[in-house]
Length: 251
Image 1 (cartoon, rainbow, N blue to C red):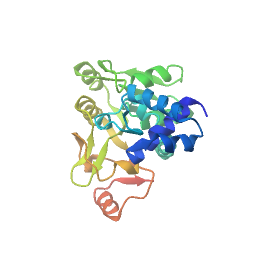
Image 2 (cartoon, helix red, strand yellow):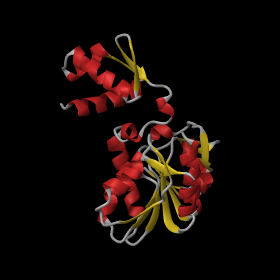
Image 3 (cartoon, one colour):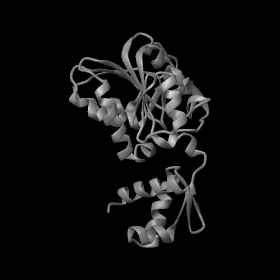
Image 4 (cartoon, rainbow, N blue to C red):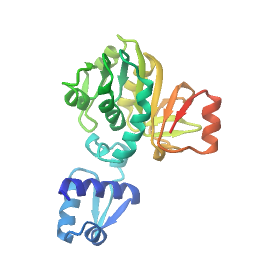
């Protein structure tokens, strides 16, 4: 196993269990404890974990607003399964606004099967990776947020308001029956609000770990979502609420 692949798996474990032990990881990956310590040192430099005696724990502050490179390494199979379910909602020739989330990034990888699409995005990563995709990609411009590789601020807001699109495809940090859809940082949250206003329909991509949680900044009421796409059947309370608000659920 390559070091980068091993570190991705360690990231998954630390997000799942909140802390890891060097001795356990050494046995799991069949490498020396010194190798694991070097892995944890690298992850600490990236701001993902804080090393402790005999192991490491999730960096609490980073958990509020993870860098894109970290988010993109987490739960990739779940994100792909969600992205596949969203594919049927997009038609050839559609116009879309897409946020800089790692789930939306997986979604765009699949969109290359569609033709004549126009994508408006504030994601630097999308601009770079899909430059030769054949899709018509419009950048919002704006001020760079390095951690999330996104563009935000007044320039981005002004650009978005110039366009009306078929669909806004977004993700979030958390969704709650009472507090609605919330996100981890205010600048990106404000930009997403502009995206939602310009779209005929709203598609929310949210895996099961985001249910019944609340993040820092309010994004949108549940009733303003048209489609909720996730990876597991939600609870009965959620099913009742989604039905009441006429939100189409795909899982």
